[in-house]
Every structure is written in C-alpha cells, then in structure tokens.
Length: 143
Image (cartoon, rainbow, N blue to C red):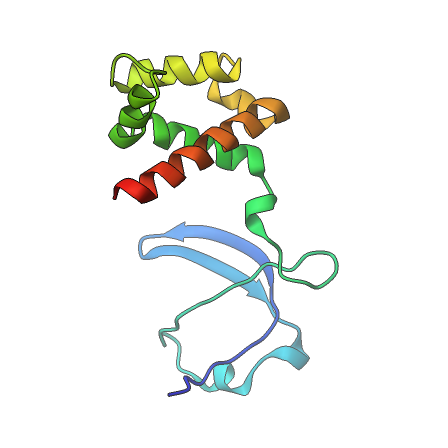
C-alpha cells in the first residue's frame, strides 16, 4: 500500500513553546505550497519527516554535524550503563562496577578531565569511539 504524501521545501523561521507543545514556523515559497496543505483544515494532524539540506541541496548527515556533542552524550550514557561496567571489568580496566568508577576510568583512559573535552579534543574522541565500537561488538555477542 502506498501512502499519499505531500512534499515541499521550507525554511525554519521560528520555534516557540505553547501550552500544547512546540510550535514550528516554516516559510514556504508560494510556488512550493502543496494544494493539499492549503485545503486541509486547521487542526489537521500530520506525520512529519524532515531532512535538513546542506549547501549543495543534498540531505545533511546530522551525525557528522557535531561529532563532539554526540561523543559527550554517548560517554555520559555509557558511564551509566552496567553492561559497559561489566565489559570493562572483564577486560580488567575497571575494578569497581559503578558509574563514578567508570567515569574516573574513562577520563584517565582518554587523558581528559571532563567529558566536555570530547567536543574539541579529536584524539580523545577517536580513542573513545574505538573503545565504544569494541564494546558494541562485545555487547552484540552477549545480548
């Protein structure tokens, strides 16, 4: 079954929060406004799929946009992950399976004082990504 969709390009012009949720404002060129969108009643519900375009009008890979931010977030999640603690303990890299011990290990292993350094320290981020990939391969075998 093919689901009918409407497609258009828009430019984000605003974002605010209301009592009902977030309100996203998009500017659509008059030539690009789909008739279906104009005809639908105010309050019609939609399933939204959005893809940001880069300077070459191609879909942007958001994972590569801010690699440091992603590493900071993932490092925080891993340090709270008991399975990560278990893996480090099996590798004899962690002797106490706690979040605090894991965080301390990670800082020492990466040569950083804070996860925030992963945003700008490319070597530490690459080392972290290698560690994470090795852990992910181990996890797949043990789930």
